[in-house]
Amino acid sequence: MTNQSASNHVLAIDLGTSRVKVGIVNQSLVTIADAARPLDTIVTTWGMAEQRTDDWLEAIRDAATHVLVQIGDSSLVSAVVLTAQMPTLVELTADGAVRANAVTWQDSRADQLVRDRLDGSMRQRVEDVTGAPIDGRYLVPMHLRRNRELSASRILSAKDFLFTCLTGDFVTDPSTASGFGVLDLARNRWSQSLCDLWGITTDLLPTIEPSSHASALSARGAALLPGVATGVPVYLGGADSVCAYHYINSLLPGALSIIDGSSTVLLAKQRQTPYSPDRVLRTPLIEPRSVGVEMDILATGSSIGWLAKLLDVPPSDIEQLALSHRSPGESRVLFSPYLAGGEQGVLWREDLFGTVSGLTLATERADLALALFEGIAFETVCCVRHFDTLIDSRNIVSVGAPDSQHFGASLVSSLLGRPVVTLESQSPSLLGAALIAFTAMGAQDESGPASLVVAPTLAGPYVDSLARKMAEYVAAPHSPHQQSQS
Image (cartoon, rainbow, N blue to C red; front, top):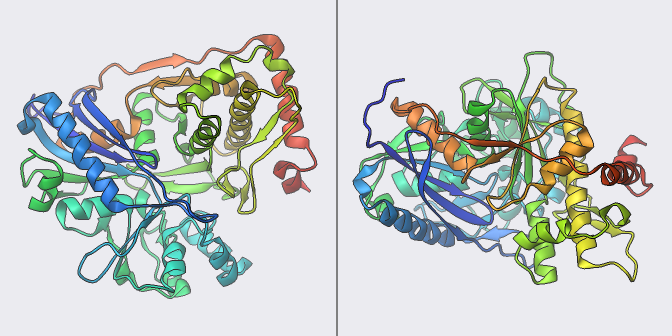
C-alpha cells in the first residue's frame, strides 16, 4: 500500500451509548489527539432508553474543536470517518428535520409489538433472511411502535444520521444495515419480502453502500467540525463493535474479540463450514462478503454504571471495589447481570431481569462489586464456550475501558483455563474506523505498536471457588441457563 502523504490524518468520530469520542489518527494508526464528551440517556418508563440528537451534535462539535486545537493545524485532516452505536433509531420528517428523540438499542418497548405481529414461522423467516433472531431492539419494529403516534419519511441509524448531517446523503453500510431487521444478508440488500412482512416501503430506508463509501463534507457538516475544510471526504465507516473487531483482526487475524462497553459484544469471523444459526447473530464485517458471528451481553458496562450510581461512586471505582475484597473466595453473593431486560448472548430471551442472591446482613459494597464482575464473567464464559462450537480461534482478545485493570479478563481467563490478551489502546472502534479511511485512501503505513498484554490469571484457591460458584450460577433452579435446558 503506497504512502501518499506524510500529512494524512483522519478525524474519527465514535458515537457511543454513554459518550462521544473524537480522535485524530495518523497513518501509523496512532491517536495523536482525542477527546470524549458524556451523553445522557432519557429513561422515564420501564424499557425506555432515548437520547437527544442535538446532544450528539453538540458533543461532537465540542470534542472536535478540542482535538483540532490540540493538533494546531486543521489542514492536516485529510478525511473524516464515522462509527457509532447500533441499532439506534433516528426518524426524519419530509423536510429532513428530526422527528423526535433517538431510540437507542437499549430500548425494549417494541418487544411486545414483535410478539404480537410475528408467529414462530414468521420469526424463523426473518432469521433465515437476516441471519439474526428478531426482537424489539431492531429499527423497523422500533419505528412501527412509535409510528402509531407520528409519521416519518426516513428512518436511519445513529451513524447514518451523522453521515447525513455531515454530507447530506442518506446511506448506510452493511454492518449498520443489519440493525434494521430487514437486511437480506446473503444479497446485501433490503429484503422486499421482509419489508412487506412489516408493511413498510424501501423508500423509508437509506441506500446500502460499502464502509469505504465517501461523500464530500458539506458546509453544514463543516460547521460541526470547525476548521475542517469543506469538501474533504467523509467515509461511511461501520458499527462500533464491527470497527473495533476490524482493528483487532488487523493485529491478530481470526481472534475472538470481547469488546466491553455499555454492553459486551463477542465477535469473530465465521468459518467456512456449514453454519448453525443457534443463539448467535450473523453480522456483516468490514471486508466485502465477510460475515462475523456475534453474541451480545446487553447490560455489562451499563450495569457497572448502575451500581456506581447506587453506591454513589465513579464507575471506575467498581472494579477497584471488587479487587479490594478481602476474601473473594468466601463471598456467596451471586449477581445475574440482566439489568437491560432481556439478553442476546447464549440466552436469547426478552423476559430476563437482573437478580442478586446470597445477601446477608454482613454483605458489603465489595461483595456487590465482586459479584457483578463475576456474573459478567460467567455470562462471557458461557458465550465463549458456545463460540468454540462455531469457530476455530486460538486467540481471545479482551477490550475494556482505558483505565481498566482487566479484572474481567482475568476472571474469564481463569475460568476458561486459556490465555486472554488485553488490548491497551485509546479506542479500537476509532482506530478500526480510521483503518477503513486510510485503506480507502491508499495511505496507510504499517500499524503503530499496539500494546497487547496477556491478562494475569488469578490465585488457585479463588479460582477453585470461582469455578464452583459458576457451576452454582448456571445450575440454580432459577437460572435462565437451567431453564433453557429444561
